[in-house]
Image (tube, rainbow, N blue to C red; front, side, top):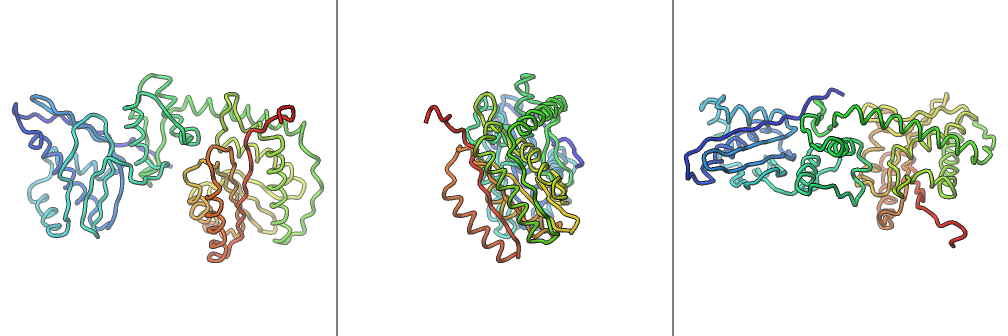
Length: 402
């Protein structure tokens, strides 16, 4: 990916003593409206977040804005700096007369706030809301609300496990804990998709890589000591046999985890490990099977629309995709209905497995019903073979305590 720093700008606005608040930031409001109209005209609909502060003072006010919509920020900066002439500004507003019924006409005062901006050309509205408005937790827009919450709370509370399962968020949080500061300059966005972001912290990347290697060595040692005897499988180069073998590998892995290996998926503090370590456990286990039948297992294969967790493939050109999720992942439904089918479509794969590790952190009984109906519909509409597998990874009481 091609990364660039997220745009962050700040302004000092001088004003006469005693000026009304609205008069002070009127220029800012016009700048935001103009920038939205100029940037997104013709796009019909756009929703994204900004991170900002507006502090009113006696003789001057401070305004800051951080936002990943690069062109919007550039237009904002040019407008407030007086780069655009009246001849350039007037046509933008004139062209929307009678179309937009509600421009942004109010903005709160305060330091470090986040807001969702919705530009809806079809409805004719631009709205400004201090709530996330159903933003995807993996996006840069959601990150800006996380930053606001992180700064306002002065501490981190993660009941849903979002930080645990989001590698970039972990980097950001640990950098703050390690250094005692939050460095916005380390936030990077993908120039091809501004809603994808990363936090530049190479020292943490190196530590995690070492930890993953140590964890992999540990589980391979445990598996070699406790792995059930792998029965000899036969592969007759038919799609039916290929699917049967993948079914068995995943079923035996499920049985292994639920009976003993679940211990490897919990850390020393009694917390579930993240999805990547679930993948490492499966990778170490499944490869032993694949080697016996001549099926290739590859982890994190780039499909052109993102990396699928696993790809099984055979010399007879049969392929299956496998995607892992923890039960507390906020994108479970999206993972089955959008993510996995997209990966499969880009590589013309017809067999897919959606594996959910249930650590008992939320009740998914209703979700199971919804996912099953979605699975059936996808099979019927897309001509796919899909399996949804649930693995009980909850800690079990020892036999002496039962």
